[in-house]
Length: 462
Image (tube, rainbow, N blue to C red; front, side):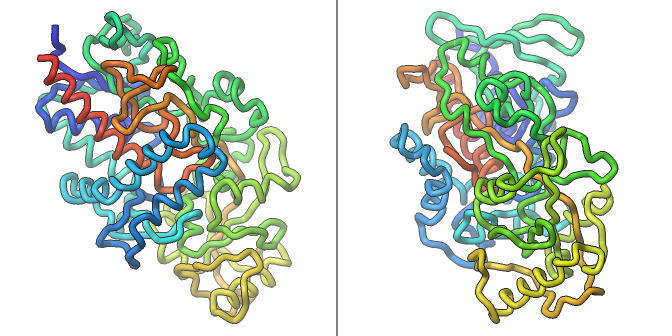
């Protein structure tokens, strides 16, 4: 018998995007979230969402530039499952402009400011011009719209324990409710439950034991991929875990294993990184390369395993990223100070960088874009904004393999009927490195596809 509603697991941006598409097709949605509040990691995203070409970009980029940047970023992973990866990346990048337009025009999200992040050859990462970080702005807008619909039923503190089957197709989920009761929902399922970056004792220990001791930006919780492998889903890239180079070290709690992300946008707007008072890398290289440049040196702490790197912004960069920096200052993660308070070698490094920005010298690390850095003649009394950062476990590129229709695939690469996946629970989109701004994009693109495909499936079953 045909189901009356669709089930979405996970209330991050992928799940919300899927739910929004389903409801736009007049399909009732039951959304299960294991956390106390909806939003997942998406609500914490701070750099923005990629899109090209859009009217907000300062420079019109060639049609295939975003695709080329993404395949280049994926690295060696492109040598396996090449056809599948290329199709997923094509789907991601070709739908990026429409994803931004959907958020702006239909959800009312401001995405008018654009920055160039590491690994990107053009500025294409969109965020709002106001005080609200992009993840919070996007998730809040979608939640507001969904909650206004009588077709939307959000249930928090619900942990899915099994994916149910009826013959060769998925027929629902079993879950434990907020009050500890075991319950079931029946219908087709969109899985958007996130990654396993906080599963230190489980999936991380299994696939990347070398990362033991690293701090993370993820709350400690089990990964959900085993729920999918239990029904035959194929996993891919589970050893591909992204180390983000800049998680803030809270000066009041340096040993905390949970870190607050220092948005890549800070470097995109002109900020620099100093190790022992010296620049040591192109700050706009891929996350993987910047993190490797840090971790190739000796850590300053083993529990958690972390380094002491300073992120430095001048007044021009601060003004461009003011809403973010003011929040970091409020949280005690960034302080307004002077160059004289930094390492004695910092003045020379900052002065050399200023010459590069002014076109008076070539950068030894090959950085070519400097955005809003404005400090031309650094002096000991020059004002800067400084925070201490360290590499952190941030994102897991691996998960259940999907196709361009967001269908979860079996080991024989055939779709599992009645099951779709979107967001960080899936694998195959990013390969060995995810570009900044592509996590929110992945959620919107494949979440919307999953929602539409699920709606088509339900209507065909009627």
